[in-house]
Image (cartoon, rainbow, N blue to C red; front, side, top):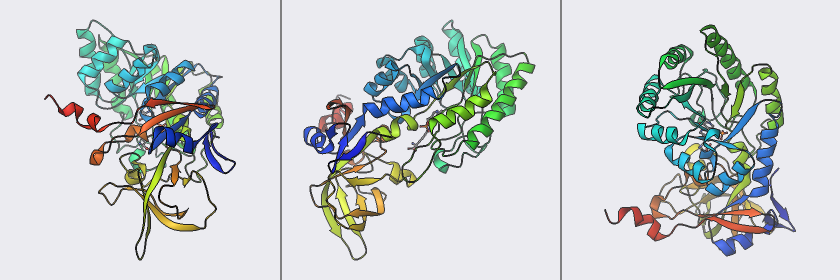
Length: 414
Ligand code: LLP
């Protein structure tokens, strides 16, 4: 359930007509619904209420500091993957003891920053990384809390570009190497192995792969116990999918129940890192038709948003529902919705049934709240769109539209 619905025939974000927002803030525009964010966070977090747990929202899905602050006020921690995300989380007031740090390529500087901040734990993904964390921590006179990310070799049955828990992926450590990592961490002066971590992929639409991975992690925890290592945390990552088109992912409640069932009596604090399931359907990208164009075999709606604003269709062939902001009841045609970037892959939808909209009309791409703005770029020197957060009948700008000066500012005075 989300709060982007048609009322009296026009698309609203909560109580506000989308057209009003476009007229006030310009086009293209990312529009988020606070009520949807809150609802999704609550639904997910409460699904694990029977367990000692911490929901660490995955910053990469939507990293606007106002969104982070809103979730933080509801009790969320964060999952970060860079010094930049650490900076955002701290700026949003997320307590460092609720921050977990994942990612395969943490630099010495980033490790130092996270240690100074006092984060909950590092999810380490290689032996080299463990050695570097150890040396940075010792240098700072600190002991770094670490978990090792296990690669359980489970097929998450999702898009190959977003599956992470298979042997061939760069993520995590296979079980034998992880065992070596725990031995290393146990003996290292600068490391305190307090947890275990696993994330197998994103946009998963069934529970089975999660459970398969969990069973492997649980068996591994037993092996660690045998070597005298008692952990405190088990981080199960993110990955729960959403409905973009006709997918039917499990409801968070069902997901929470299935996992909780297996985790009863394990005695570890559970960390979860949901991103998409919180943010995905809490945002849309609204834009305007600039031109229409027909060839012998194609009909194009040329719009003012492009792959630099929403890259998922171009990068993964992802589906985003597109609809008129103010439907007029015209018949459907098969069209491509394309932007102005000089790339053939610059499309928001291809061979899609949509009414033949006219110049100046507004359309919206749904399910754009996760991996939308965060993956946007300035390609073709297009300033990135503004972001607006709606709450009931009010709205506020949470990121201004970039200007031409923003494009060149870092290049001047060099
Ligand atoms: N934890 C870790 C370690 C991750 O790598 C990710 C996502 C998450 C949590 C959050 O996963 P989620 O709950 O959002 O599925 N750009 C792609 C998705 C990439 C996901 C990367 N990692 C897309 O647009 O579909």
